[in-house]
Structures are given as C-alpha cells and as structure tokens.
Amino acid sequence: PAVTSAAPAAPAAAAPAAAAAGGGPGSGSSGSSSSSSSVEQHLESLVRQHLVYCKAVAALNPDCYCYMFERNLDSGLPSASSTEHWRGVLQALQLSTQQVNRILAHSELHFSSLNSLLDERALLLQQLEQQQQQQQQQQQQQQGWSYTEVTPCFELVEGLVSNLKQEHMLKVGLKCFLWSRVFSPLQTAQVVVHSHPWFPDSHAMVCVMCEDAQAAALNAAAAAGEGARCGSSCSNGGALRPLVFPHKLQQCGVTALTLAIAGTSCRVSGRE
Image (cartoon, rainbow, N blue to C red; front, side, top):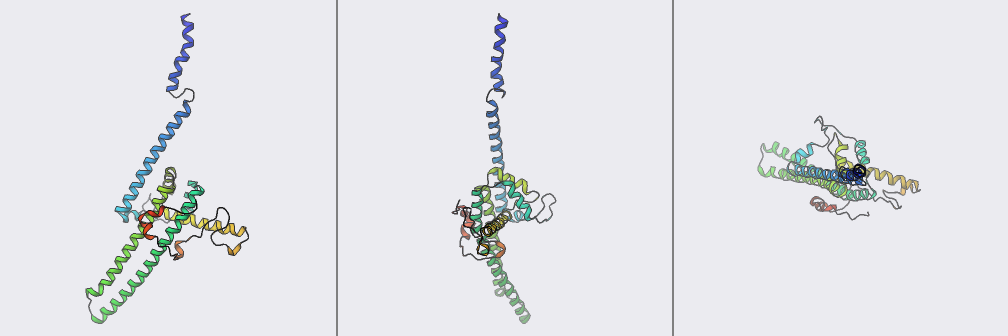
C-alpha cells in the first residue's frame, strides 16, 4: 500500500521541477518571451553605444568620421558604393508607410538646406579665385605683396571652412534623426549589418528613397492619365509632395538651416 500510494505522488512532485526547468504547462511561452525581452534589451544597449561612439567621433574628429565614407571597411581602401547597394539596405529594413513619410518630409528640409550651403560654397570659391587672380596681377606689377592684400583671401577661406562644417553637421543631424527618431533599434542594427563593407551612409539612403518616391509618383500620375501634368506628387491617399534633390542645386527659399544644424529639424510637421 505504501508503494502504490507513493507512485502517483511522483508525477505530482516532478511537476514543479519540470516547471522550474521550463517544461511545465505554459512555461514555454513565458520562457521564450523573457529570453526575447533579454535579447531586445541587449540589442538596444549595443545600438545606444554605437550611436554614442558615432556622435563622439563626428564631433571630436570630423576628419576621421568623413574618412570612413565611400571606403571599403575590410580593405581600408577607397571604394565607391552603388545606388543598388543602398536600395538593398532599405529593402531589408521593411520600413512602414509612416516611417517613409517622416523621412521624405524631413528630406525636403535637409536637401533645401544642403542646396543653400552648396550655392554659398560655389560663390565663395568663385570669389576666392577672383581674389587670387587679382593678387597674382598685383604681385607681378609691384614685385611684392602686403598683408592687407592677403587678408580678404583668409576671410574667404574661413567662410569655406565654416561652410564645410555646417554641411558636416547637417549630415550628422540627418543620421541622428533617422537612427534616433525613425528607425527602431532592430532597424538601426540592420542598417549597420547590411551596409557592410561600407560605413552606413544616411545621406545616400535618403537620396535613394527620394529618387524611388519620385519615380513612383510619376508612374502613378502617368497611370492616372495625368501624363506631363504630374509633378512629383499625385492626388491619391498616398500622395508624395514635391521633393528637392541635391544634385539639382535648387534654391527653395527655406531658411531652416540653423534649425537643422541645431538638431531641432527632427520635429516633422508633415502628414503622417
């Protein structure tokens, strides 16, 4: 009788142990969820560290930061990336419609501010060339030079340096906006992984997004029978607004460069 009564008790006694080991009823889902949560927290921690390092390098050593772009990180040699490479990176992210809309809205501010910088740089370079030509002519005539003649060139060079710094800060601000305000930690990690062997280039990715959005809008407008009347937007629910591309050097009259450099341009007011 003692033996027969102890036998049924064995499974009952083993149940708590099995549950503790993850084999009890319902323990599989709780164990996997806790494990998944632990992995997500570890990933978020790694992504935060990566962002801190990138911001620190961009702020403390801009030359080193810019050195990493368009360079094969395995060989260390200069290597131009392709548009298809960044398009593949974007496809791997599986961005939502809301994320795409936020990026496209911010891209208008980013590119218009960038175009203003490029226009200013072209003017500074033109003035610098004129100043150098004038100085060469004066030196040939006077067989010498004075500090007062060189000072205007120094001022133009300082303007160029400031212009380049503003472009650097503008592009860093774009990366911070995407990685901190738009992408999830998992998507940020995917950008780093799929960008290999190149360093993640947020500017190149946004350029590809804008070009694809432009092409999609034109195709949608053509399908609707609008043909040449279509701009860069259509009238359906997923309409895309006109976009400004950096290679066109268009002046949009958007005086938001200071906000973009200060990092406050991430407050997107576009349709989401």
